[in-house]
Amino acid sequence: MGYEHILVEIDAPIATVTLNRPKVLNALSPDLILELTTALSELDADENVRAVVLTGGPTVFAAGADIGDMADRGPVDQLLRDQTGRWAPLAGFSKPLIAAVNGYALGGGCEVALMCDLIVAGETARFGQPEINLGIIPGAGGTQRWPRTAGKHVAMEVMLTGAPVTAQRAYEVGLVNKVVPAEMTVEVARRLARQVAEKAPLAARMAKEGVLKAFESPLSEGLASERKSFYFLFATDDQKEGMHAFLEKRKGSFKGR
Ligand code: HXC
View (cartoon, rainbow, N blue to C red):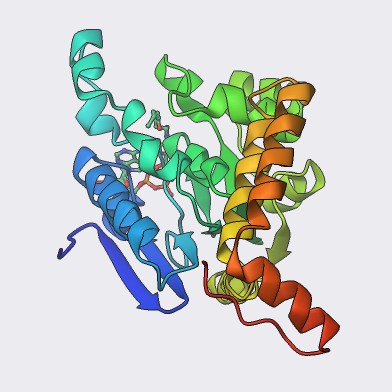
């Protein structure tokens, strides 16, 4: 499928998806969201792709949902088009997803970054939830993922003041994995993606599932689920390959089977 608002580059085993509405700072219009979620569903199904980088390019990640599109809508319009529920293919993406963030990641844009598994931030990155300035609140997970990631008080500050935090502060509170010069952001994220893509894909999938489960279940349930995944992986070819490669002092070659 050809896309108008995003770019998709596959360089197996990784892919890069770039939000591409620079004139409006990659504002997340319904068309862009549809293209992004469609592309992610396709990449999730593509066995040649093992990790994905999601970026907005060199100057901005995304300045949030398209305000022009939302300004005159009512609650029923919002419910019927399910503006916030449509992110399921992103939140439920089964492979490692790495955000490469330069410039503003605001509102829905910040929430998109929070749905990724790792975040590489350029020094110019600014993470914020300015919805309060518009008389609304975050609607794609911001109120839930910020406190789980950065703690209650940082989350409150970001939600209640609407002021963004710098890349460095985001790093200090655990929101971001690495801060790099802005011109390096995508490259560093791709390097990380390649590193992850070398690992056993089913193990990566289950490790991701396990970590996400920690946000959603009591410890005992999370541990039970982890145990089942752990045992399941002994049914895979990649477990045999990984352990025999170690014993034979060679590098494992994983097939995702
Ligand atoms: C629509 C947007 C936009 C947005 C920027 N633009 N953000 N259009 N929706 N979210 C447009 C501007 O109107 C302008 O278009 C162009 O992009 C450049 O923006 P400027 O404001 O001129 O740039 P600058 O002065 O550098 O300021 C950058 C900025 C500011 C601080 C990021 O644009 C800003 O505050 N944007 C809104 C951020 C925001 O409130 N996001 C939350 C949205 S609500 P023209 O045509 O004038 O050149 C949300 C809810 C999520 O995300 C719900 C779940 C999905």
